[in-house]
Image: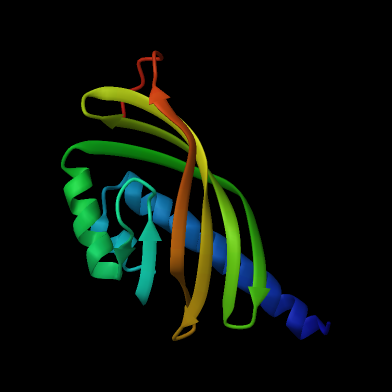
Length: 144
């Protein structure tokens, strides 16, 4: 690989990691419009607990409804990325604290993602969430 290609790969990986961090930030801030803007027009989001959401507008509507009754505090880490030109795939791990249905919950899982470069910017092509556990917490966590 050339120096230029190495630098491009580093920049792409950092932009994709930032995409996942911005998504988590939008969820923390209950910014449904901001989260949905991170998805490509033909993207799919599969949370595993309902039919997959297709397109940014479906993501926005689903998160607006969810944010009315839940406070989510995702922490993403250990992001592994495979680049392939203007496409990429990766796994991003998740620790989650939440208040849902009046109860404190904690969980852990991961996203399997596909990314696409659109207009020079990386977007989610697909996100599939797998929760390893998501249980009530006795720690007294409050996601206010």
